[in-house]
Image 1 (spheres, helix red, strand yellow):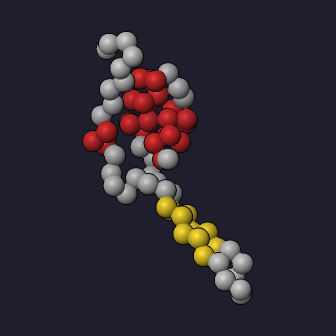
Image 2 (cartoon, rainbow, N blue to C red; image 1 turned 135 degrees about the horizontal axis):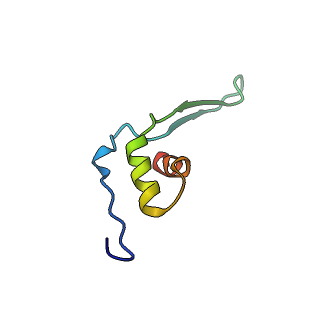
Length: 65
């Protein structure tokens, strides 16, 4: 691999691989949050972690952003 280049196979990412939040406010209901958590992507997280030199947990957090 050439220095300064990062190559990742992003074909493993699905369109549903996003964190969605719905925020609602009203006089009766102060605030509600509905979180949809993305499923783990261990293969892609491991590839990113190895390529960039970070922990798999941090890699998964970055992928979920």
